[in-house]
Length: 292
Image (cartoon, rainbow, N blue to C red; front, side, top):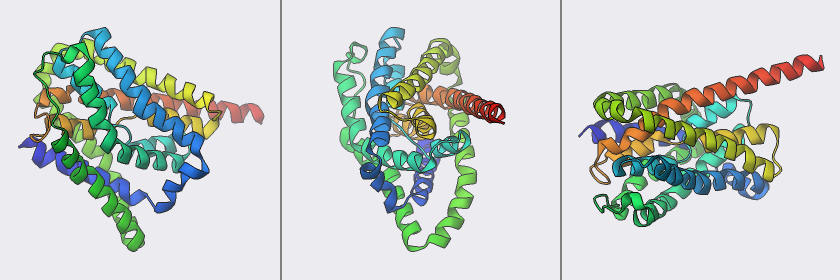
């Protein structure tokens, strides 16, 4: 009941807010700036899940947490990444486009990657955890794709109204995510207390490795400055609300314990990325002072 009354509305609201920030021209960056988009998508959709699966094996996480750990790695994007890109002096247009592409592509890649993980990883051979692919697709359709499309259409046909709505939603989106993480933190406090050591370290390593991967992939693609900072943030920032919704949904996994990795991720992700933006800003100020 909690997932239906709290998680689903918050995820839907966040996706609608994302849709309000998009316009059809955002999808043209695949043609005009393919290297930057490919760098982000490869990191989000390939590197992240691979690193997560490797870490679950290194830490020998219990199956329910291992699945939740891979799940958060399969949920890229979220409108918060656009805010962090702005704070870090990144390329906001690229961030918005990457968030749009990854949110839509994930609707199809997430079931494939999760199914592969459940079938091929030794951690999941107990067979106690199964993936209802059809229900997962339907839930993503109604809580993600539909709200995004409604947001895009609202901005297209009623731009002034969309701007007013987005101004309000942008202020409450992040607090809603924090509230969601806090409620689940309280609900699953005992599980978090017991496994915070190994899960916390695994999550922290996932974030740090992905930040390094984002920087490395960007360099290989010949990206610099604002584009590179944006790729780092987009690869390092996951959609915790989506992972929590899928883990706790009565239609998909129906196990609030599986949301624990996403809760810990949501807390650590913001600390790490705020530190990253602070370092970037400080470095930029030093560079400007040196020039003058």
